[in-house]
Length: 193
Image (tube, rainbow, N blue to C red; front, side, top):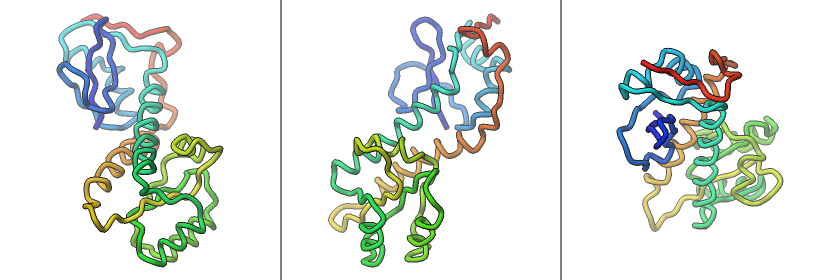
């Protein structure tokens, strides 16, 4: 789910990190559901006041979800837990040192399948594109990534973080069937109860 709050000017703000102050309004991380929430004026009914929806509201949510997922990869990279590249992941899979894999959505199937055959039980997150994942490395593209097992520390928290952040992005992108908001050509959609 995605938390939304009202900004100081009455605008609806997606609180992807779930840290902004104010009464939260929770909506399923689904493109279609959020667009229907806007169309049916559910934010207004929840807050009992006039709200503003910015132009590009849904695109902004997707961008923030991508940023959150990529920052999780960057955090794990700085902790020394990310393996990048087919050869490194191949070796780590053979040694049973992989917690989960992250595959670029636009990566080639044959490379992904070769790694999957080595250990088909490893979870795969594949909702981000190579250019998006590359931001965690300051590279051009990142196609095959893996999170290494840390025998000294628990892996459950890291696994939960990745599943939550990438899960929300995946659910949002899967449900995007080019849903159009009414009045989406306006600078903002303004509704009054």
